Image 1 (cartoon, rainbow, N blue to C red):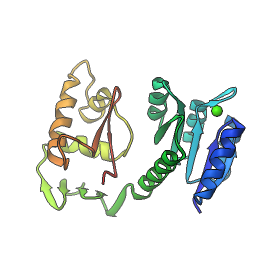
Image 2: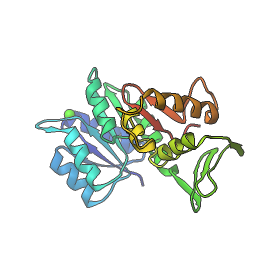
Image 3: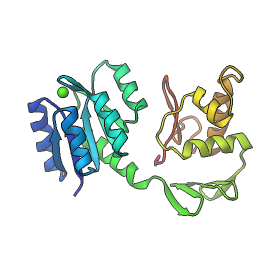
Length: 231
Ligand code: CA
């Protein structure tokens, strides 16, 4: 049975969500504070955490930080409307998704299913040093990248950039961070436009729909992230 830890301090919300999610077949444990949330995850790792940002005297972002020290469990952040900065902070800190209140129960279920599905499929190591994400495979011994079976011709930098992103699926990297890690350079020495240009060329080669890139997603205002599941 798939188990969800629900972290929320408002009793009505806890009742509503627990009832709905139990009916959907999930097992729910609830927590209403930072301390109880951390102990719930520490005691037995759930399959997913639903975490509200406002928890009385506690801040959901602190809960997220504490849980991340313990576990890589998928976390969906519940934020208030208009709190774009909270949303961004949550994703930056390692939340897997976020839902803005008020949301419909149908939307919540769909997001939960999507996050759980992602978790099951990443990353699948088919043989030593081959990373496979659906129809994209990266062989790190031969440096061969294939999309739907066809070998893709990448420059050394494009290859390094792809491998770097693919090693941390769904993690957001700023252009500055990519310059540091992939180019071993700081923004002072190399222009961040270099990154933009390489991302553009890489997308051109690996994306199914070049006008609507999915594999390397743009996270507005933050940077880029590699999506393990796009179909
Ligand atoms: Ca709350």
